[in-house]
Image 1 (cartoon, rainbow, N blue to C red):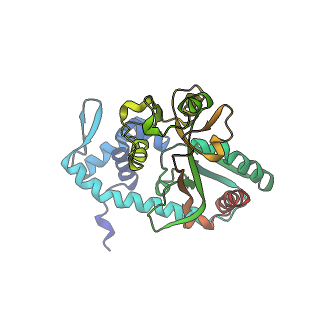
Image 2 (spheres, one colour; image 1 turned 90 degrees about the vertical axis):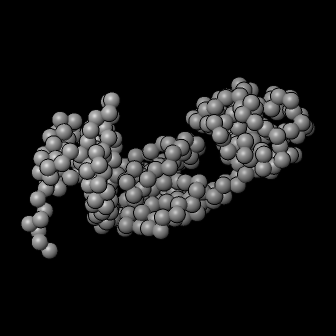
Image 3 (tube, helix red, strand yellow; image 1 turned 120 degrees about the vertical axis):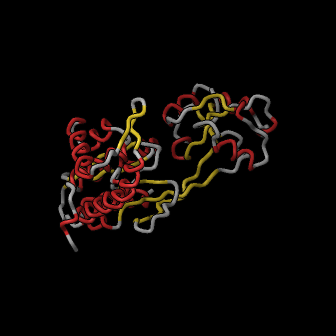
Length: 296
């Protein structure tokens, strides 16, 4: 290979890649824990070295030029390869201490993982866990988390996937609201009130698939925070789906339409990178989560 053709600085290419991926200098600076002026100098130096203009400003945002888009398509595999290189190197670390990030939903973070982390701290006090609490799916390839609890089976072939259990999910409401509906079927009520995550919610699809005529007008409140949903249910504002281990534990809350609605079943998956399974701290956390579900 003729190495003399590499006439640009790899660090400058990295700066360009991160800025283009994040969409702004400020977001890229936060991601790299550096400053906007530093990134700006690196990108300008790359433009001068390659004699191209990579970005143009549109309002307050950045847009890739045609040349910038063409070069981004070339540098993107380099960025992904660098990430995989880091993952492989991280996977070779055989330490009994270290940091491990775990991505989990709000309900798992409150009702499941504290017991796991308490037991883990007794067994491996040198392992520090970062709990990433989000109902969004973390991208393990981009190192948004080392381990994730998911409710959809990942399709990537380079991930370690372990089924933890099948979760049973019921529709819950305040005891007063459930008593108000009585023994009616959902489609027999004239004032069915539901709590949805967002517009176009799959909750409506669930009811329609079961033959009940419901619409957006039946959604009393939209709320993506599951803790807020619990309180909305307690206040009688509507019905919401919760796993049985959550809903059955809530005071003043009962299962709604138990004779008419078959509970949903969701498979729970534990996911991590194949390379990361060779890391002792990550394997320890992974195994601790598996053991907790098996005990349940």
